[in-house]
Length: 407
Image (cartoon, rainbow, N blue to C red; front, side):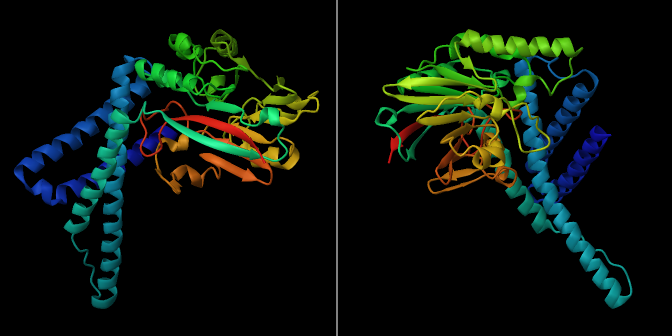
């Protein structure tokens, strides 16, 4: 039923978008009609093929790179046509109101013709996401950006002052199609000479095998006090069908083993104590825990903290940032810094000095960067990889370098 509703929704978008194209001034030109019409119907045919293939055969049955190209073009087509459809829907609302007005005044129904102005405006504005999404896929998918952030901590011991923590999150290795840029990103990480590296979940999209071609690459990340990792919502294999429960459990066990092969210390509702000079620091890691109903709650912070001795500073790794206000700031006020990921910044938005926006902020209050509540901090990483759409528009993939600062 959901698939049928989705198809009907896409059909409505197609019909409305075609009205905008057909009425536009560009379409009235011979070369414009051929060019725009060909692009429009090519994207439509590709979408029909792709969703039919998914429904009848299933995903992961096409060659990976071919499916990647097709999926990208289908997504670009849908978002572009959605913009066109919105303008035509606005125009139909105008026509309906005008028709009702003539019925009241003249006692006769008259529906005015569609506005060529709105059709042309829709086509011009629709070109923005069309070219932006193409650019985002070609240029920004592997455009790793370093974000530096100092975190002022009251009463921080001198031994922890200046401690450098590098965070990466949401690798989503099943989406990768190139290795060279990832190698360069690892070089960027190691060049920071981190004291500590933290990975905050979503190593894969669904299956443990997705990371295996990249084990050698990611095992190169090194830090003075080690690499610590946790699980994200995609790491449990909850989003695909398995032959049986045993197959799903075997996949999960294999994923945990792959963390070991990387040389990463996977924290599953547990903690580690670091001795840094004469100071002690706790690294606490919970499994995925979300305040939102559509994501699983595998994490247990009380279990993770159980038996944790008195330390000078506590660092929590929790994949979903909604966990912070839901539990951490309420019941665990001795946790100074929480590191999260999950949102990807929706891989789409605007980010310039002094201003950032993404549609994801209407879902997650804390979605990218540093947040503070009293003497507690949360940092949300924008993600290393990508999911579904193989690119980014405005919100670039992130490597975070956090430096603790005594105040």
